[in-house]
Length: 133
Length: 132
Image 1 (tube, chains in turn green, blue):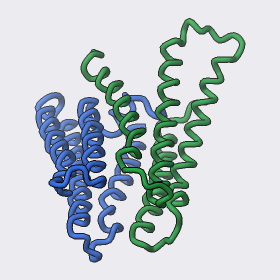
Image 2 (image 1 turned 45 degrees about the horizontal axis):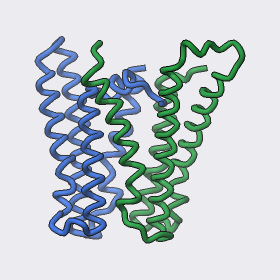
Image 3 (image 1 turned 120 degrees about the vertical axis):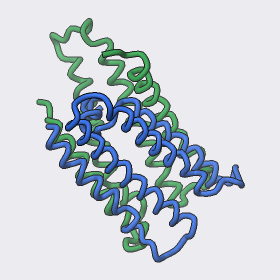
Image 4 (image 1 turned 90 degrees about the vertical axis):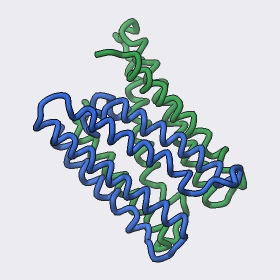
């Protein structure tokens, strides 16, 4: 069953709104919580996305699935999985840095984000400059 | 992943090229931010760090104005109005955030700084229901 655009936007909107409210409370020193708690909406949203992605990928293992029709699709799904893991790695290292669990430079914290953005830009750039409707 | 590129273009109201530009600006901004915070570029001020965002906002406005001449008049005006609203709210947020980081004043709360983002969120929700 596929969710409609409005349902998917509502899901994204809800978690973004919750995260923003918690972030503002923390930055204005109204909530003395740990950064890992502030990121709870992000963890929940990422978990939902990961489960959805894994379920879709597991659907390929069902009997009767023709692999000839999905070689491009599985590559895309694999990239999405890597992108999700990169985002998760970035958020985790950022929280660890903000909580001062580590003294590493911010440049190292940003490495997963840069990899994610480079991948997204490559995919988007291909669509902009090479794909013609 | 959750949205296809076509859905994103419809929902956000930006062209694929503009989304590409905004992502590129985010990448350059994050590099400059890391350099600034790690003290690897001593001459880099907060305004310099944010300059990529300001530049891409201007460029995106220019692209939208160029595209305005194409297509049906009423739709073009509505599209331009939407894009300019989004870009101006984004610009106000970036300006306020940059000012807060430069001056480190306690008078300007993060609640006030992020208010354009909250407005943007509501606008995007309404637009999603329209597009749907």
